[in-house]
Length: 208
Ligand SMILES: O=C(O)CCC(=O)C(=O)O
Ligand SMILES: [Fe+2]
Image: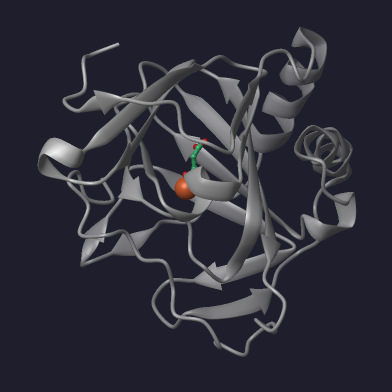
């Protein structure tokens, strides 16, 4: 891992769990996600190299609207249960599954997940390993952390790492998929657009 500038600090609320799915399950999940029809992400007039597909609910960063999306494929519902157990939240609270496809060399820039999503985010990694970076504060107060995300592992973002830290993923070495399970905050009704979106904080790396 490349060195990050800043004071090394493990973010509170970050959980990392290797081997949440077996190699056989990963193979089958990879077949499921590889067959999906992925959508482009356009932000700040740029098209990201990573592509996404939402299930459950869909959040439009342009209009800040939540809309109903297709139900999760059964294969994703199975892993959702495991991710919910890991996070200690009700399975049914994880209403969104966002599948992200990262071709080799693609990234996700510095951001916090939109506040419209609930306090707990769980991410499952499939395919290539990658690094996930965390930062909060600036200049001499900057705190940094990084964790290697192995395929078949999952992470939980809750508490401070969810609310106060930003995260990013530098260029992935090989094709990677993630499945991010998220809650929707009470009061943020579908299609209500009640919440401002958590657009990337003028990211150091942009949406890539
Ligand atoms: O690919 C990942 O594990 C991270 C995805 C992410 O940070 C997001 O979609 O907000
Ligand atoms: Fe995120």
